[in-house]
Image (cartoon, rainbow, N blue to C red; front, side, top):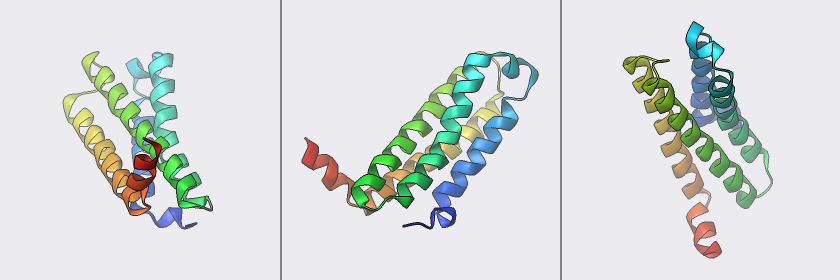
Length: 125
C-alpha cells in the first residue's frame, strides 16, 4: 500500500481522465455542461479513488475505494456511449476510450480479487 503512482491501473486512470478532458474541449461537447461535467468528474474519480484506496490501512477499506473507482469507470463507459450516440464523439475515439475504461474495470476487478475482495463480498451476502 502507498505506492499508487506505480499501479498501472492508476496510470491508466490518469490517461483516461486526460483524454476525457481533451475530448470535452471540442466545440459541441464543451457547451453541454451537464454531460461534460459528469464525464469529467467520473473520469477524475477513477484514479482519485484508486489513490485513496491504496493509502488506506486495511484491505477492506482499499477494496471499498477500488469498487468506487470501478463504478466510476462504468459511469464513464455509459457517458461515452451517450456522447457517441448524440454525435459528440466519432466511433474511433469512442472505441479507444471505451476500451481503456474497460481495461481499467478489468484491472480493478483483479486488484480487488487480489485483496480478498470476493471473500469480503461473499461475507456481506
